[in-house]
Length: 214
Image 1 (cartoon, rainbow, N blue to C red):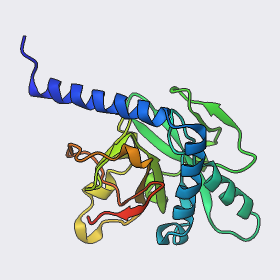
Image 2 (image 1 turned 120 degrees about the vertical axis):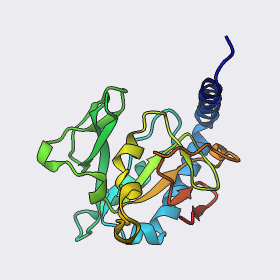
Image 3 (image 1 turned 60 degrees about the horizontal axis):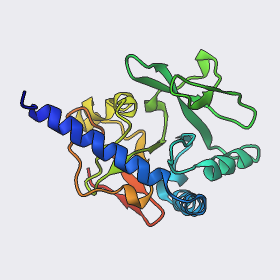
Image 4 (image 1 turned 180 degrees about the vertical axis):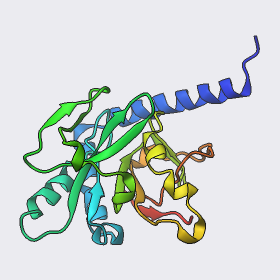
């Protein structure tokens, strides 16, 4: 039986995703540390960060860029009149691909979610949706120079940010700004874009912070 075009594209996406995950995972500990420091500095000095109060980050896994330097900075300054607040994604429904964001402070307890990734233990009243964030810093597997992002395939961020695509242009909320965090080796020439995909506003790697025109 001849494979359909959809089957071929799905296989190509799977192959690309796996190869880049392997490359990312094979970075030395020193390289990972260096990249994390450089990326944190680029974020901290960016206008996007300076203008944001509610910031969603993530806890790294599988070779993703480690944002613990940035998280520690947010935590250390929270008691000094600092207005920025740190959040992490929590899975509300794996079946429907739904995430919300829970506060993450120095005393926050963590537990493993259905993917084995740590997330905050929270009370329902603490949860916020993506529209309540000013800045969402998201991991990715691949990105291109048009602002397209390839994630792990669950579509969690795309669903959380659909309001950015469905709102009328004149009233479209600019919140949150959606920024990808990656190693430069995760850049590819071109990614296929689907109607449900939410493009990045910017990408930050160890080499640059680049904005995309949208």
